[in-house]
Image (cartoon, helix red, strand yellow):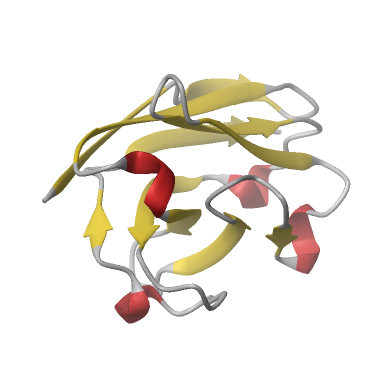
Amino acid sequence: QVQLVESGGGAVQAGGSLRLSCAASGRTFSSFAMAWFRQVPGKEREFVAYITWNGGRTYYTDSVKGRFTISRDNAKNTVYLQMNGLKPEDTAVYYCAADNSIYHSRTPREYDYWGQGTQVTVSS
């Protein structure tokens, strides 16, 4: 089992920044690829960013490229999402997820563990 706890969400104005953190406990964190997803009411959960177990590769959805950065610190069992240049359309509940597969996936059902989510609200 892996327990994931997100933090760092909040309310900001457009153009602002937030840094989300996801702290993991339980099984060896460094063996998992990690991702961030987001969801708004009435819509499916959407892939945002992905990082391999060692941080060697990252992937982003097109709408956040150049604005968001995913990173991880395996010594601290934590994955981060630095969000700059926030836009109102980034408003959502953000979830971190862990995947013990070696294959990159953008599909929520492929992920093994999820956090409870943290709300990000961007006002215009």
